[in-house]
Image (cartoon, rainbow, N blue to C red; front, side, top):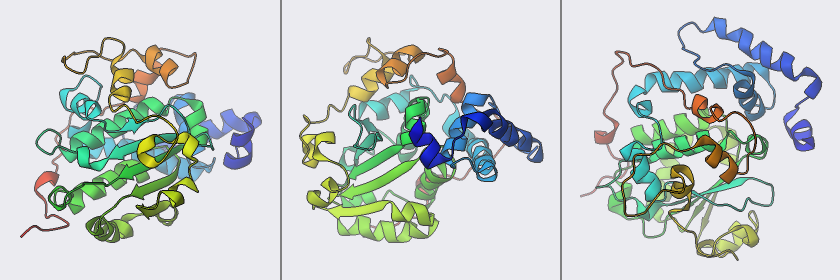
Length: 314
């Protein structure tokens, strides 16, 4: 694509050489298990770092290191895992069919839908990471990237008190530092004062580039529409599209047999998902290969769910 050449420095003539240079660096990190190193996989990391080979390898290493250090998150890392499926069915994340005007896939999160008796924050993060694994198989999304909208309407102080520094830092590490996705914008809408306070606390963990792409709109949807055209948005965000169907993405992943009221134990059909996401062609096993899990090892992990809250309740 012309966009890949102009914006990402992708050169078809040197593509295989670029990929091989990254692959050759793997020997420098024997402490990490690189479970997938095929051309298609490395290419998405090159695109995420604009074909800077050193930065690409750093991201590739962090991708697998994050999985090694958080083994519990990636056990049963598939759509029919009960906790992942539950989060998906509750709309975490929402994925719009219509891209924004730049071709980016729009992800949406309705924060108040977080039923903390039903889903832990880790469950939601796992569902988001798995969804990104599926979506990033599409080369167009590797190039165009993603936009995230978080609607904080009716998100209570009590709910916010469960967002501990440790689990927020985990999310930042998993999404900002360890995943080959390009995020063109992260938009907060209808955020209350305590979400502003939370953002102030996590700001030091964010890269400069990430901070510049976070927009706090409050209840001013006009400022959101200046960055994402209303024709790309559902009515909840003042757009011209119909209201968002919270179960749509879950149905896409679980396939045609998914039912809102019935528990199924299905793994998604990779070809079905690829076609639904606008991919096309390719090996049916490719999507499954990207969901790499590191074999269980005796690594201890902190209990993130019981850490000190950012916002303490009286």
